[in-house]
Each structure stands twice: as C-alpha cells, then as structure tokens.
Image (cartoon, rainbow, N blue to C red):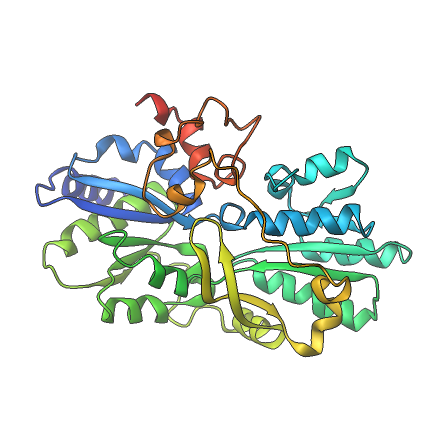
Length: 350
C-alpha cells in the first residue's frame, strides 16, 4: 500500500501542466481530504473545489419552512436526522420551532419513525426524507412498511434528490469530477460513462488515503490526453451495475420530479416523489402543505460554495457571524458541509 500511495503522491506533486480544477462532489470527500492533509501536497496548478454533494446543504430553505409549518400549524411529530435541526429556515430552524413548542425527534433511520408511529397511534408522525440515492431506498422501505402495517398516522416530507442532472447542470464548473463512492455504490457506473461520452471527465473515488490519492493521480494522468475520461477507482465497493435491489426499491415507490437545490435553483427531473399508489404517505398531499418558497439569508454564500464559484472563506460572514455554533447557512451545519470543513480545519487562516 505504501508504494501505491507514494507513486500516487509523486504523480500529483509532479504535475506541471495547465491549471486543473477538480470538483470533489461529495461532502465526505471534502472532509477526508482536509483531515488527511491532501490539500497540503497539491501543487498550485491543481485546485480542489467543492460541489453539491451534501444532502443537507442542498436542501432548500423552503423545505425547512414546510417542516416548521407541519410542526407548529398541524401539530405533527417531526422525525428527522440530526443535522437538519439547526439548518436555518426563512424565520426559524427546527430547533427554533422546538423552542416554541414543536415536537422534533432525532431518529437514525426512517424505520425508527415508522416504529414511533406504530407505538403512538394518536400521534401524526412525519419523517423528513432528505438525501441522495444512498439513503432514498431506506425512505422507500419505510413507506412500504407503513403500508404493510396499515398505518394511517405516518407520512414523509420528501426532499430526495438524484445526482445525474446535477452533474449536467454543473458541466463546465470543473475539469473533472471526483464522483461520490457511496452514491455510485447504488447507481453504478452507467451515468458516469454517459457523462464521459458527453465530454465530462471524472473518477469514482473511495474514502481512504490510498483511494483518494489514487483517484486524484488518475485524474492528473488522464487530463494530459485532453480526451474525456471515466475510471472507477473504487471497484471494491462500486460495481458496474450498482445495487439493483436498491434501485428497484426506489423505482417501485418513487418517481422523478423537478426539484429545487440550494444554490442551483430548480433542476428538472433531479428529485423524487412518491408514486400515486403511495400518495397517502406524502405529507404535502395529506396535510395540504401550502406553496412555500423560502428566503435565504442574503449574507450567506452557500449557493456559490455549492457551485464551486467561491470558497467558504470568501464569504463575509464565514467564521464571524456564521460558525458551527451559530450557523447562517446549511453548509456550516452539516457534518458533510464544505463551510464546516473549512472552519474545522482552519482553512480560513490558510
């Protein structure tokens, strides 16, 4: 392993070609690259920029507002993953709603929310379904389970997203993508190969030092040919066909829809919603949730960060008005957020 790491490192450090911009789409990649010190070995002509691969970060303000509305106006018990609680809405976060009496409960899986609904038939339980292809199958499974149990007091508020159309939107933002290994473990290689045929280069990367350095070294070497390329650098986890069972689960329960992404706007066909036969578990339908656009804090540049247009440290409130303890934007809240990574690893001072 040491020989592989040294070889990859020498390729990266020895790069003397034109400016090379690589987008690490995945928030976990961003954090691991910082933690492992990989940025420190990059020559000046290689720039790593962050993309929209943090599900909490790309969830729009309006979704938080919808959840707050369900909690305060409809008295629903909101079940959610922990990161979402502190994401600012237009007027308040879910934490703020809880301070006003809303019932917000952190769960670890969607099935936990189903069990809460089953144990508390007098409660209206809503699970906040946020995530990419990695976590969507478990949300679908929870809906199927609720239907099998005949539960009438369980529903989900969807903000599930898919990556392919986001890549299309981000064409031209970077010279190559560092594709997220956990998403591709579900989706496989097909979309990445298609993008390469359309002129978009990228590699699927894992999360260890060896896997990340190897992926970056492959990008450096392949970029010299000027030809679009795709390489799966995470074959121990990502199979060509992905995870067919998970894909079937998604296809059975959900269907594509247009979806709003923080910073990217509405991307056609990039979201997922429940199919007609499962609409009784769609919180928007069940509670007639009004159209809520949501207003982002104008001081926050999360949108630009998610598109690779700026670094977190370019934002005027980064590390000052916006900190992990008092976040202004979602990118500072999530454990996968770019602003969180820059703050945690002192990039504001580098």
